[in-house]
Amino acid sequence: MAWTHPINYAKGALIDPTHLNTYLRDNMKDIYTVIAVQTETLLKNNNASFSNLVGMSFSVLSGEVWSFHAWSYWNSGSVADAKWTVTAPAASTGRFGLAGGGQALTAANETTFGNPIAIASSGSSNQLVNLAAYITAGANGTIQLQAAQNTATAADSNWYLNSFIIAHRVSA
Amino acid sequence: MAWTTPITWAASVYDDADFNAQIRDNQNFLRRISVRQTEDAVISASTTFENLEGLKFYGLAGEVWTFVGSIFWVSNATADAKWTLQAPKGSTGIFGMGHSLPIAASWSTTFGTAIAGSATTSVEDTFSISGLVTFGRRGEAYLQGSQNTASGSTTFYDYSYLVAWRVPS
Image 1 (spheres, each protein chain N blue to C red):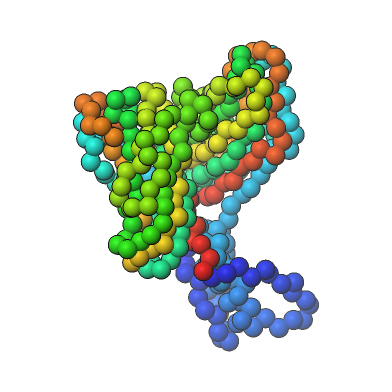
Image 2: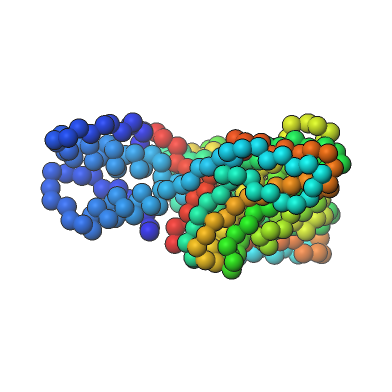
């Protein structure tokens, strides 16, 4: 759905269904935005297996193209560090990555959904990364953010609730 | 205020429920606020927070808002810089930032807590900010900035900006 610049309406002009479809239906679909909020804190201890960041997800249909930014609030020890991934429906294509708060990156972008992107931890209790992705969905399904310790370590790592995604469907 | 997939309009008769769902609710769903800082905030040898004029958004009790944005600033290697988000009493949430240099504490869940970043001497710099606020009562959430250590001059520039979205209930 492409954006059509809204026209100026003149007094007495006839508004027919074409106008409503172009300037209401199609334009609203064009600017449709998904905001998905993490609803519970994920705790990992001695565990490098990915788990869902619950709530950090949105539904897509086959062939749709989406981009998103996400802000993930986390902490972890400087041995465990942290990693994230994006899972997507089968045959999806695109790229996803992260930018961190001045820390070393192990792998900052990926084209294979489910593969890790990782960052060193400063050891601070409060850290934040910005994740981003551009995805063409290969099937109907869900885009989901996941996280885990990068090195399984017997200490707590947390990914906090109220982290969020802002996703936009890219115009066809 | 849920999103309803827009219908295809036909030459037909529609009632108030149609227009409320298709226009009122969907446009409320899509609404976002984009604001910019309207004047420089120049801080001289002070760690007292000052408002970053214009960087604010309004919410009603119980509403949930997310925001992202950028704060443009310059300081010195002694003063560094800090910012915070203030929100109405009873509000909950989280706010933080990314920066090109390591950050001691990148986020907080206590509104009014300083988020500080180091400055490289007189280099023009940027904080990438984000957050989520569940409003405890109606009012404004607004940004403030200051020096982290009182020294010399620090400027938070106009045209810093934020974009805020109301999270659908």
